[in-house]
Length: 510
Ligand code: BG6
Image (cartoon, rainbow, N blue to C red; front, side, top):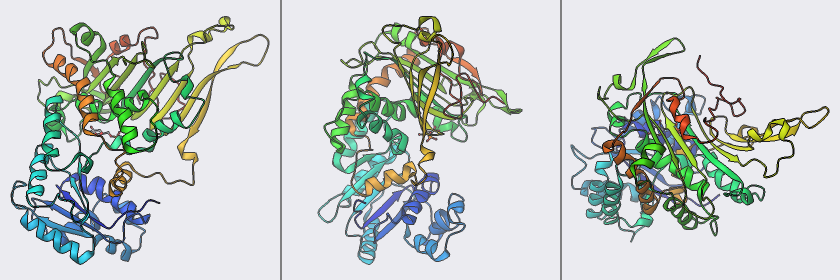
């Protein structure tokens, strides 16, 4: 186990939902598994008027997000965990003098022995990131003379290339790049990290991982929920900004990248940036028109229950043109991937929640068993990110009997079969990494900018281009049918089921 130094975690926006829903349960898991350092303090900072005791009750003792985890646990242990939490009211605004905060941090540091090491977690609206970073620096709270200081920022990181660059520049005035940790919770998922291992720890896949053997690549990210209570945020964001620019392009970069020199953070991140920079940016209207599809979910009935259409959701403009479905086809301009199309789609209100990567291999160059019709079925490697996490290989086998009739068979691996291993939750893993100063699973400034460079022209085109369509799809379906037209040759997406080995076209509609 790597060493985790004594430290303090200061959470800005601590009275918000993310702290109670994600961060504290992740910290609790780290506490239970003995990963927290000996001296550890969590200082919540936000604009609500709370005492230490109120804060402990809110995020630990009476938190509905912890109930299941702590219900059979020893009360002393839980009390000890709760006692790590403190709260500082910043007053009416985040843009204030942080001298009182510095005093509180200093006192807690002296009392609890956190050795001047501080991790700031910005769980606030992004418009406040720069303000908070500046006020911390002005109060002398970013200097590393007396212990390290790290700054974790949540997504969305920018709204466009220009705003992302401005934000990077703004933060870098007060914290150096090596102090900044941009979180993307998909990188905290074991199955996303396993993309690296699948590729680079096996000699059976990597030799085939190129244009000579791969026909095309398909990535699906589907959610069955709608925008829930986040209509206000989502309507200004949309599927491309909310999921594609960050989570999905992170997955793409791990599939596209060249082998890194080693497993160091910079070595891996250098290759990811190179991969993102090699995505062919779509510049002309024809390509943008032919290679992108956007759509919105419409009212429908799922399992006998009526669900609202996107435009009827709370916080959403009734004439909104924000997409809840995005499907993009693109190419990668480098030696390895020349002419291999990538198809990536993400959407809300689909038949099921699933994220998977499908590598479609080319049909054999010389087909001996033509009669069997096998040439119309490709070999597939399916990497299931969630749920039913695992890997599935589809390959041909001989059907017993005379002649050579070939059918597809499945070879599967499930994470759940690794009974001995407890899989860390995404936030748990990412927090622990940042606590240990490991930035491998955090996005670097140039990585974020490279992703925006690819996404910006699509957003621009959708906003101002000619002949841009917004399709509708009934909630609970796989999106607009014309999305199949994107996939040349084959003409349809693999619509995955709830389970890894569900047959194609299976979908949970009722
Ligand atoms: C978030 C998006 O980043 O990821 C949400 O803002 C989305 O809209 C969520 O629902 C999906 O995450 P996961 O881990 O449930 O796939």
